[in-house]
Amino acid sequence: MRVLVVRHHEEDSAGFVGDAFVARGATLAVHLHPDEGPLPDAGPFDHVVVLGASWSVNDPEEWIPAEVAWLAALDRPVLGICFGAQLLAVAFGGAVERAPVKEIGWVTVEPVPGAQPAVDPGPWLQFHGDRCLVPATATVLAANEVCVQAFTVGPHLAVQFHPEVDAAQLGAWIEHGGRSEVEEVGKDPEALLAETAANEPAARRRAQELVDAYLARVAAHSR
Image (cartoon, rainbow, N blue to C red; front, side, top):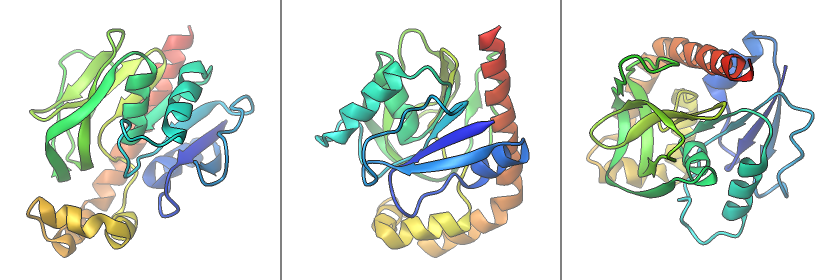
């Protein structure tokens, strides 16, 4: 199993999600978009993971529509995380808008009863100010009072939260411009880091379960 990870910042990694794929026999290849040039041909890969970004899908960056078009034309299943979920929403006919509040911190979500794959209520780490208006063909798996938190469209699974992040990665975000965002919502960055470190064992388990749910979704869709 080969997995292409698309990231948008040097400090980002697939973290717990990447570890879960590797534990299930995958090898990972990572592409930093747009800094490393156009997105690669996904032909050699079985799965694509698209990570978050500090941009909005609606920002006037030339590479964002290119990534949306790449996803829309892709014939490989995708696990989209945060910005990756928003790209998937737009690629399949949905939209993205500003959320009524920024969600930053550990937040529980409400799974939709009976929806498959089932999504653990968490808590999950959130770090976003936009939200998805999902495509008509999507199935919502989980939500809360702020936004849709997980959905499927075709074989793809999209999540608004960050199952991949540990304290080290959150610390890198804080050092690369995130401190002011954390403080904007009335949180103490050091306290959030400590909470994230305490949550790591459970977060790692939930990430593994999410990857298993994604792989089961892909297998069911291919039948």
